Amino acid sequence: MSFDRNEIDLLITVYDEAMLGIVRSLLEEENIPYHVQERNGSALGMITGFSMYGADVYVPVPYMEVAKSVVAGLEDAEITFVDDEGNEISVEDAAEEASEEED
Image (cartoon, rainbow, N blue to C red; front, side, top):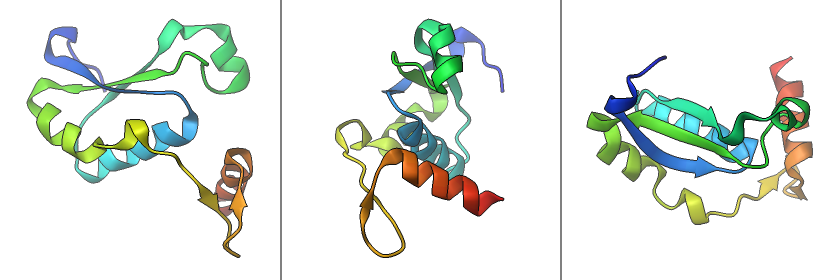
């Protein structure tokens, strides 16, 4: 989805793929359109799958207040992934499990 830069504003900056997935999911649940722009769109992001500089999530100005309430508290949140047995697992293991479930 493309937006005119004058009609969108920065909602949140995220620094890992898991948090970006959560933000996307929350916004989609509320039918809030968004645009993701990797910071410093370097080749590193293509190699590692995510830029170490993070990604900015923009939403149209009319949706901003609702979008802020949807993602409130995420910037300070610590994400813990748990497997089916209740054991804490790494982000990488959680992503691998999720991709296996999709297959």
